[in-house]
Length: 288
DNA sequence: CGATTAACCTGGAAGC
DNA sequence: TGCTTCCAGGTTAATC
Image (spheres, rainbow, N blue to C red):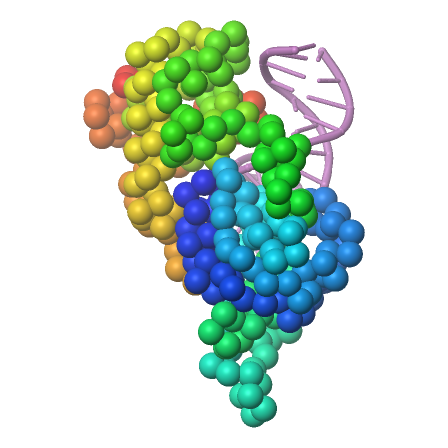
């Protein structure tokens, strides 16, 4: 579900709770999600201090005091929620949330940096999410990250870089932008929106994008992601930030999930087509 | 090698 | 009120 803006929103929600917190206990309810949990997952986390919360593309990174970093991917329906406990861990101040149920697969029992207690629960009905553990010093060299293209909001993402990635690619531009090795972090929503803003057809062959159009596309991608993060991401069905708040960017969609609506630019109806098995929304009048 | 398709899961909405 | 079919913010193994 979550694309880069939603993952960034989750990161911002978790950061103040997790940074400096110590993991007192790990409640892992099943051996696998999309993939098996890492070996001895709970054991390797227990007792560790969480040094911060980072993000790369759609991955959350939780570097630990042990020299290992937990990578988390939310898949389609992954979600973190936070329950703050009492201010202290003194006797009598004990606090416990309801036991995990339904699709709550993982819960961390935390002693916060300031001394309070918090529970962080990961739920994921479809179980397309997953967790991995990598050595922090090798993180950029890990197979998972080596396969990723540049961060769209970072300095490594510019017209020339995108041009090179698209050259020789005969696939539709839409499909190329969903490829995480071209640019990392886009998903179905923001690809549709960025193509609309750039005035480019999702059906155009990727290799037909020249320097000028690549520049427009880079600007459009940056623009839509920045505004989506400011709005707290998009909530369509079940996405929510770690604090339970819903995103608001869906109110700013120009084309996504708006089949039949009038294009705000030219008035033509927004079309829906299927590309590589997924819905694409676009305006045939504005996107060439 | 590059490029579509199927598969992994569950739940909600829409159609009959 | 069922029962069926379709669809969903993603990734990846299999197939063409």
